[in-house]
Amino acid sequence: MGVLKQDKPIIILDEPFNGLDIESCRMVRSLLLALMKKGKTIIVTSHIIETLTNLCNQIHYLENGKIKYSRTKEQFNDFQQNIFEEIEKRNEKIIRDLI
Image (tube, rainbow, N blue to C red; front, top):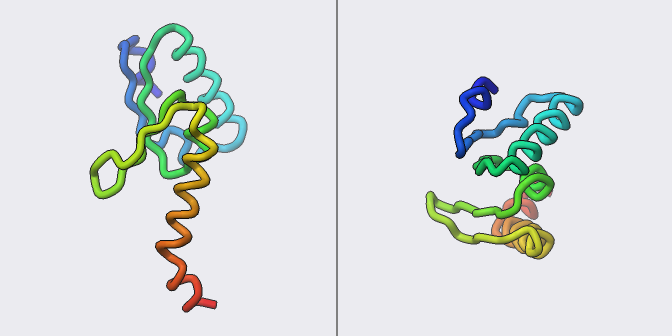
């Protein structure tokens, strides 16, 4: 995470928790929260919703390269439930065929 040493106002991280063990994940999360408190804007990409809902103040969900949903922290529970339902419904036939 050498990018953090540059002390920029905006930090963009692509899958920063990918491949990390539990302790390292917690350390990175604590570091990012501390940077947010210092006024840094941090943009994190992830395909794991739980990672985002545990860290972020806002989530922007991309589908086919466009923002499909934007939600604030207060809306995360409904957002997560809606996304999972949508994914399950879209893949219902595939799952049924595999069983």
